Length: 440
Image 1 (cartoon, one colour):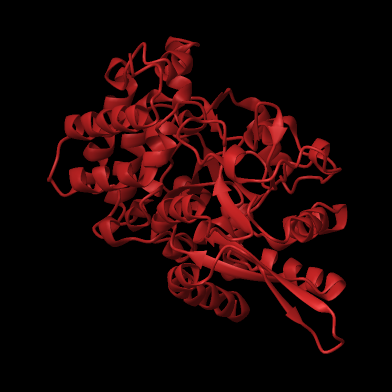
Image 2: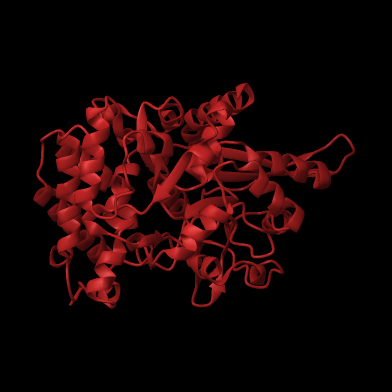
């Protein structure tokens, strides 16, 4: 645990220093002359905090790569909230790092234009070894520009089985049952749900991980939204869920301190049984157990689908963070070497083993860490692609929507205001992109 804390502190310090270092450092990796007279190369690797595992797994692999090749990797980590704007500026000015970590899918209109700024990697040996859905998330017009590793993301409510058993609770399958469960837990003196509002992204998950509700009404709704044939106010589930979030917050189901909660403290809250439920991936239990081994999170915590709006389908996000090579880099070949190194089967296995929060990779050759119980649950569920990977101008405003919800929680706005703001931002972004659906 001390080792993990030390690594996290180191990463946090790096994040604080990153903005300055990125501003001061140009796009090209450095070449220096070593003691043997040979040139040594340093590749700059720009990322946001959540783009790299907190366990330091990628940094550990980079050290192994340096030992093997002599090529150093200089990680420059920025806060999540700043990264998207920062990297856009760096790319536009020609000062981006050699390697760029960015969110996918890249074929959405609201994503970075990596097909303009980054190297086409379609001819690399490892490309065809990625799952097709992951490969499509880093491709534009059948050209692959990035490499990615995590398997499909699925966010569940993780719950304390002991608390549910002691209170004679059943797993809820709709919103009314969910409210009843929360009230019973609250009456027992336990905070029902750990909500990490300060992280900005976490409170947004109920809105857009429940796209199965939208698709059940209209299987073509994503295409219609992208063509601007319908707008979000024509999808009643969205406003319903926003209102339900407000209702649960006001009922005390998120606790007294949810507006100051951080995801970093969720592990302790769950391990000490101060809270009964939290939204996260199944692998989050491994993170809890790594820091609180006495809690046995993988045994003591079950999972169920988020029942907001009476949702019953698990949202599947085939995309994740991916790495791209800056076309303007002076060391494209060295960066390709690093990607090839990361894609070796033994290093893929090290990544999976080293990330306590990761249950599977998008590389079929590597067996997942899902238990039989987890796999049975996943296999039993209806699945639907999440909104943010399917509808333009949603993912790009994710953190802003988090602030909108926070304003609603404090009483500064209404659910209707939140919905209108999301719609207005989509229109603004689409018009800036000269999207033909908006620009007549």
